[in-house]
Image 1 (cartoon, rainbow, N blue to C red):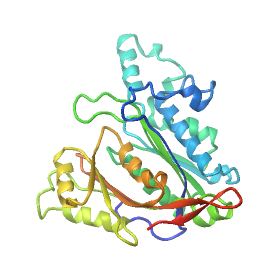
Image 2: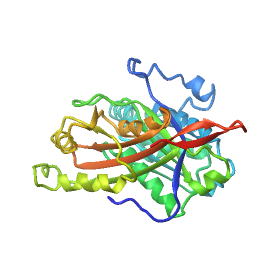
Image 3: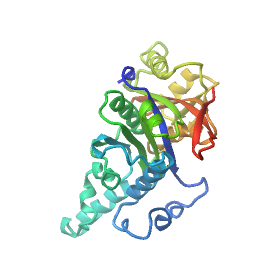
Length: 322
């Protein structure tokens, strides 16, 4: 789906949170589950589910947790590639070595990746819908796209969008990602009525071009142009490209040209969403994040983040920054 859904309600970002390790943090040791989630209730959750729960809670707090939104009007869309990979690896080893009857009952339901979002959905009463997307490299941006479409079609009044990864160990290729990022999306009119902090807007789109169509004059160039046209609005914004070293990554980098800021894609779908939320946490600004995967998926998100300034009531107001 390339062209974003344009009619319906104006969608804004009211909450943002990232739960990710610092650059030099040792794998796994950076996250204190008791401090983040409390001393009880998370013992039997996979680590990816803990990251997701922490990011979702933080984002909802930053959106001034909207208790007034009815549960049946709340939705959740999660993107992941490796959010349960370590658990799947352990479950496979248990089944092969000792038999399926030795699987731990508390963890066995997580054989289905959709269960990853279950604790957050239950705790926060997301009864409108809950779904998980797993498209390689672009699942996080596709989750944004899905949420915006649902809100504009009137299927929900609030949607939490999240990307989550746990540290899978790839046989080859880029290093794994770890952590979670979450955004709260709402219709502008509803957010303003309840006094939520309107942090900005975004537009997301995705498409697919089969591998091997990367030569000059092929299908990739028009696809990238169409992707950028689908998400851009208003003045031009700097491009942040999240690309790997595959032929597709190199071809997209060449099409974007030297002005595009680039960062190396890792094993997962976190990096594009982290690039998208950075303007919200850095005082405002515009950015277009573009990502591509070796199997052929392309995605982009245009962010217009507002600078939040204090207001006398003790809340915050949004001051757009071009």
